[in-house]
Length: 281
Ligand code: ARG
Image 1 (cartoon, protein in one colour):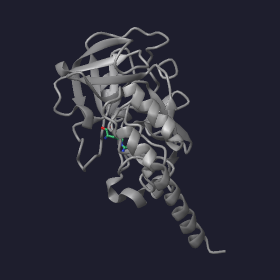
Image 2 (tube, rainbow, N blue to C red):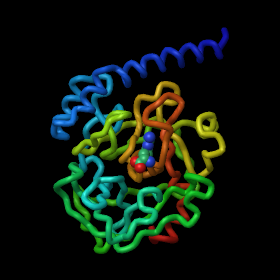
Image 3 (cartoon, rainbow, N blue to C red):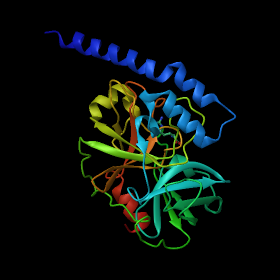
């Protein structure tokens, strides 16, 4: 049996499938319609494009009661990234979301399924970006936000646990949440929080995709060969969770949900000491 040939065949078949799903007329029509409300745009997309129904990409509508640690970050009235609560005083996010951003410019919406209403708005008093962020490129993509006032804790607002220092990322499916793009080349972001499950990709395998750019402070998640499920623009800074522990922070990828291009997450276990040093958590 020739395994290489079999694998190649599987891969080619999957790519063809995915391209039909992603590039079929159904999706581009819906997402490029300018004169519809965002909500309607989303509904249209689902109806017209069942292969991509549900969001993030390849996920489904979710809620803050399922993910009470999820935070939406707003800058000048625009949602731009996610984040997650790790204590009553701190939110974790990606460095690339907040580098060169004044704390006073950031608003966080906590405790809401909708990114643009509900829950409560909190102010940020301090932004700490990892001093080694971007050295090498994309590495250490992590930042902590200190909140101006401690959060209440209730059914909709609650810190999530972090892994122990150096704890291995389990090879399981992680849950990713956010309000990022729901179609690879879409222009609309959903109003409702979305979630999707992505399998962790072994580090050695993901290196085939990203080479040396993939450091020990990162890990990958996605359906490696076929893609189809992933975070996308706007999901950055959000968590990747397994059984109540946030192992990852959405960092980057080549495109969204493409084959051989899994999402790269910041590995919170690898940067655990830095998190403790900067938050006490
Ligand atoms: N960095 C982007 C952001 O700021 C997206 C991260 C995930 N991207 C992706 N293509 N899976 O939201």
